[in-house]
Structures are given as structure tokens and as C-alpha cells.
Image (cartoon, rainbow, N blue to C red):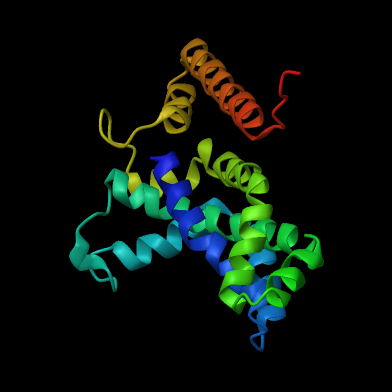
Length: 202
């Protein structure tokens, strides 16, 4: 569920970051500031907003996905997207400006120049996605509000930890926490290995 939310946030957020950095549209600085502020959006607030949209009287109530994994993924998407947009935009602004200028000089269109920058900076995308994943991987508030914490359906490890703790089963909650931390470390190590510089044998 979290991987799907991050993949969708990356598919939406990365092109949006390119547009905000290179398009020259009026108000783009204000938009970037808004995304920077939304990086600290509390998960319960995001859950409340999405709940209002997905509830029976909401704008998207006809979808009937409240209290399903799909609703949880929507909430995680809302939380991850500002981080991906802000971090991707920050990286693009710090990229070597000669890449874009050279592409334009060689006859590339503005879109082609943006794609050239994307090719040259693609190595930074994985850490950006990882940051978005880290934001939502252990999120509890929005998941409980949107998924309902239904056993064997929408209950995930973080919400299960909250339930076990409230029931006094601290050992079980601690075991689940160890599993969650181990999974987070494994994902981080794998991402670093995949995104790190490759050494070629002589």
C-alpha cells in the first residue's frame, strides 16, 4: 500500500517539480513555498481532509472506498507528495545550469532540455522517493481514520502496534515495532545500494 502511494506520488510530484522549477510560471515560488509548508502537514489533518472527501456526503463519496486500503493509500499519497515535490525541486534548482543551457544551445526544445536535466539527475530520484516512503511507512493517524483499522483488511503494522499497546500486550507491540524498524532499515540499505555509485572492475 505504501509502495503504491509513493509510486503514484512520484509519478505526480516529479513532473510537477520540473514544471515549478523550469516553467517560469507566475506564482511558482509561492507554490513551492506551499509545498514546503505541507511537508509538515500532520497526518491526522491529512486524514481528516481525505475523510471529508471520501465520506458518503463528500465530493468523492460515490467511489465507496472509505475504510478500504485504497482510502489509506490516498491519505498516504497526500502526505508523500509535498515531500517529493519539495525535495525534487530543491535538487533540480541545485543541478548544474549548464546542462539545460547546453541542451537548448544544441537545438533542444524547452521540454527536451527538461528531459536532459532529468536524465543527468535521475540518480537523485531514489533518495527523494525514499524520503516520501519514510514519511508514510509508519504513519498511524490517517491510516486509522481512513482504513478503520479493520482486522485482516485495513490493519497494518503501525495500527496493530497501537491496538496491542492499548490492550496491554506490550511484548507483541514491541515485536511488531522491531519488524517495522527492520523493514525500514532493509529498504534504506537496498535503496542506498541501488542508487549508489557503481564501481567498475579494472
